[in-house]
Image 1 (cartoon, chains in turn red, orange):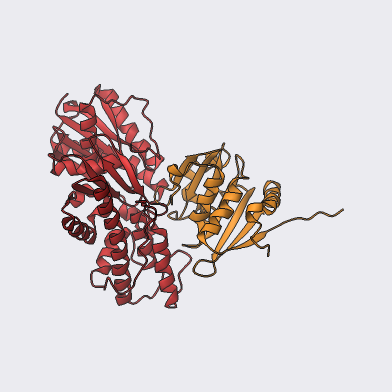
Image 2 (cartoon, helix red, strand yellow):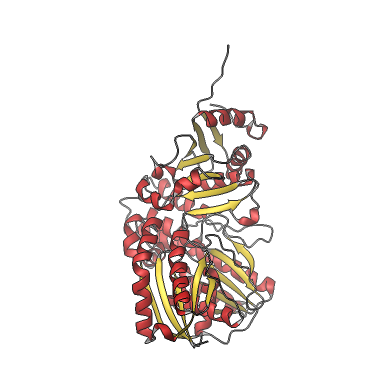
Length: 345
Length: 170
């Protein structure tokens, strides 16, 4: 196998391609974001997403090759996200990957998007040891895994209703802060008081490590209504004073971060894992990073998170995960299909 | 000849648990090709009701019926397949077309659509609309509005279901 692997990722709103050398050296990592396209809608519009992936995928792959200074015949394998995600979007990536693998006569490997997020950390810390606990937290996912050894993922907890990133998006919309909600809440909350409002911290009982963020979103809504504000049909609130927005954003963020941190630490202790990995778009959140680091240090745990560009959706993580699976002899056939609910286990 | 026709049914739910129970009673009666539209503001209990419907369709809780806001459609397999839509992020009906919604609506499973008001003109004429309204912190008004003979009949069955006897008819 040649030393270059091309990764392709189109599971949600980013069209991404990356070239890795020897499975760990990032030669290029190109992401065409659809955020501007989706901003007016306050979220991902799937029909727009798949159409835009189709327009983007070829230029993004070409750019990834060009930046890596690699030609198509130099590639040794192709790794692609096969799920979970929007089927229409995933299909653009898998079709591109299959066509290239067939035309070049090189191996194809399918990767689970969540494994990609977890694997991103290995690009910066290749020497990691098992076991560890990993939290993948993004717009569509809040999944807590125990990873006793490579390729084994045991789901310890997940959200019972809204994903953490979704709660950020919905509350950002309530506060009129725009999309994506994570960075918007973080910016708005910077000057606010995180203790101003005691929003509920929802923990599942019976030793469960599941999350629930739906009630937190509703609590923000009640708080606004309690102050006499009228929520629009669209889910936005008008004429909020900036100091109030700052306090709500800071207090909301504090609540969500505390819940995430508590469950992660609890999981690590229960599983006697010394290492905690934070992954996914919400892992960019500075408060979450600080809070988790502090909580982990108190328990004598090590905590690692990828650089922000490797936290949000990207293809380097897909190439990294695919490379390891190729070494293990895994191959995907040209009948590879995208799966919206692909489980990681 | 006395024919009692139920055109609408309004019940008051006192808690998320009660909302789920109503969903479960409804889910146990649903058949392949049924379409249920959930209409209501943020936090009105749509996902909660959908989780109940999933229970009624005997979907294994390990499949995790969560909010599909981000991924738009979640598919589950129980006694029948459940297609759980969430159109929160959609701008309007035209944006639904390319997803091939008719393949779900007229397929082998049950379709439940959150924020269905964004799919006006695309959802089938024969369907069950459920309008949810927040009355208090935990209290919700849940109004079932059947469209077409299939759902008129279904409403009759729901009213006879002992699981929801405690819900008052208004």
